[in-house]
Length: 77
Picture 1 (cartoon, rainbow, N blue to C red):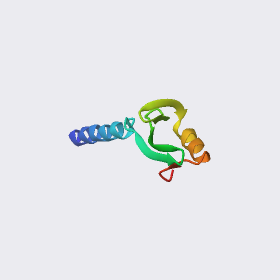
Picture 2 (picture 1 turned 90 degrees about the horizontal axis):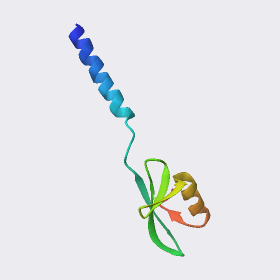
Picture 3 (picture 1 turned 90 degrees about the vertical axis):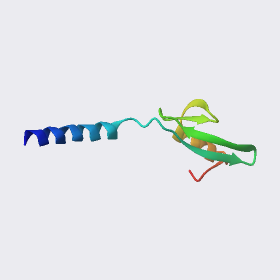
Picture 4 (picture 1 turned 45 degrees about the vertical axis):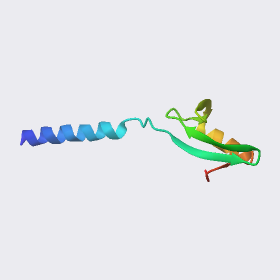
């Protein structure tokens, strides 16, 4: 019985650690306006926005909100 408990414990810890691992990926949207060519805005793993690969140092949510307030369309964000 102890062998099964240990196996269950190891399995549970493995699942827990994998589910809590920080996502290193990034999500991107294409943005455009009448005054610019289409460009890509990505949310980096630290929560900041990058434009065409250049980190802005600004929060992704703030950056997208400000772009939309200026009349930019960012993929329905």
